[in-house]
Amino acid sequence: MRFIIMLLLSLILAQSSTASTKSCLENKYIFDIGSGGINGIGYEVNTCNHKISKTIVKKYHDLPLQSCISNSLDGKTIPQSCISEGTAAFTLFQKEFNVDCKQQKCLAIATAWARNAQNSHELINAIEDQGIKVSVLSQYDEGKISFENIIQENNISPKEAKNTLVFDIGGGSFQLNYLDNKDAVRVYKGPYGMFNFKPLVLEKFANGNGDILPAAYLAKIKNFALEEVRSQLQKDKHLMKKFQMPNLEIFGTGTFIGVGIRSQLGLGETVTFDAIEKAIDILVGKNAAEIKAIYPNMPEKYAVNSQFSLLIIYAVMKEGGIKTIHITSDGGINEYLALYDLSA
Picture (cartoon, rainbow, N blue to C red):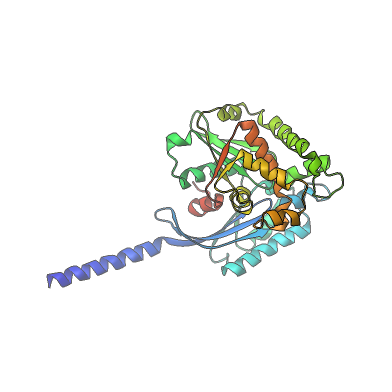
C-alpha cells in the first residue's frame, strides 16, 4: 500500500510540474524590420526562466527600405509603392506563420530606415493596424541590445565582457558596441550600411555601368572605403582607444554578417581580415550571375550589393587592427525582444 501511495504522489507531482511548465510557455512572433528586409521569427518562450524553448517558424522577406528612401525623389521619403509592399509583407507573414497578430503576441522593431525617412510613420502605422506593436530603436539602443544579447548568448563573463566589442551592420548603419571604463555600454554610431554606402561608391567609380564596379579600380575602391570610414572612426577617441586593447575579442552580428558572410559567402564562424579582403577582390567587377557561379549559396538579388557591406567591414577591420571576427548566430535582436519585450 505504501508503494502505491508513493507512486500516486509521484504521478501527481509529475503532472503538476508539467502543467506548471506549460503555463510558463508563450508563443511570440518577432519581426526585425531592417533597412534591407524583414526577418520574421516565431519563438516558444519560457517566460518563467527567460529562455527560448524552441524556434517555431522563421522567414526572411526581402524589402530594401533604405534603397527605397535613397532612390526617392527627395532621398528622404519612402515611396508609396514600398509602403504598400511592406504592408503586404506582414499580411503574408501572418498567413505563412498561421498567426493572427490581433490575437497573439507580435512585436517588431524598426532600425535605421525608420530614423532616416521623414514619413516612416506611414509604414509603421500600417503595420500596427495589423496588431503588431512596432518600436523604433535609436542607434544607441540598437547597439546596446546587440551587445547585451551577444554577452548572454555566449555566456561571456563580466570580466571577459570588458574585452569584447560587437560589430553590427545593417542596410542603413553600423554599430560598434563595447563597455567603457565604468562598465556602461558605449555605442559607436556608424553612418553607413549597405544601401547608403552603395551610392557613394557608385557615384565615384561606376562610370555609368550600373551596379558593376570596374575591376581596374579595385585598389582605389578599397582605399576610398578606408579613407571614408576612417575619417568617421577617428572622431571617436574612446573607440580608437578600445581598438588598442590587448586581447580584444570581436563578435559580429546582424543578418548580413550572420547569413551573408558566414553562410552565403561561406566564410565560416571565424572570419579573418584576409578573407574579407579576398571576397571583395572576387566580387568587384562581376555581375550577379558571375558571383552566383562562385558563391552558389548567395542569392543573385543580394550578390552585387554584398561588396558594399564588405567594404565597410574591410575598412573598420583595417583601421581598428581587427584580425578576426567571431560569428555566433543571426538571431540577435529578435531573441532579445522575444525574451524581454524591450522592457529590460
